[in-house]
Length: 262
Ligand code: BTN
Image (cartoon, protein in one colour):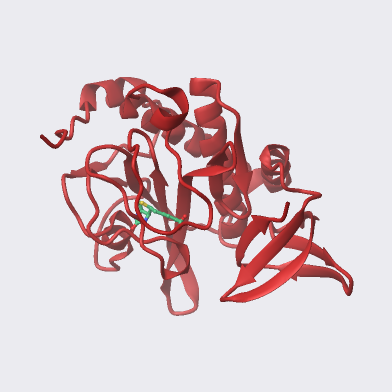
């Protein structure tokens, strides 16, 4: 028999210490995409609303990929943020910071070594445990809201499809079933703190991201819509863009998928 979704709201509530993030919590057994529901411009959801789904029928990944996640096994959720003047130009930094905070949350809860891959993947032993998709909601030329969508593989042990980085889950790494509620609550607590840092100490957020990234200094291949560029991952700049060292000098990269060359 298929395992039944078993999210324990009390366990989640007890651990949630935020002021606004996750205080409006919308739980769905099945939905197309948690990002899509929050991106709807007509929705009146408040700042910090979290939409959580046990199953997504059209989960979205970066570069128009799909995000497959087995029902009731993982964490697939999105957070709605109002973009004020302090966050407006810092979505890149928020993107990197979210990955770093997710990596640190897992590391602290499970004593696992977790790293980030530019811009916002979370890897355990060089396998992908989580992905993040940030989408902006604009009115005219202005970004009014952002939706931060997160998929973390928790108890799934079989993955089908083709992957650039092989997938993993917490259960695969720890050999035991893992409760999802505490991870979600802890992450949201840390995410609320991150927002203040992104607003007022953005360079500290980038430094924490660098500290969690083992790929800086390594030879990488960057894939931009099928166009490949090789070079050395020199650093990130003060806005979170990747600095790629090539024979022709340093190139500033604002999107793409990165693979380490061994
Ligand atoms: C990636 O390609 O690595 C990003 C994956 C993001 C998946 C999450 S799951 C919850 C949220 N809803 C979606 O449709 N996508 C994001």
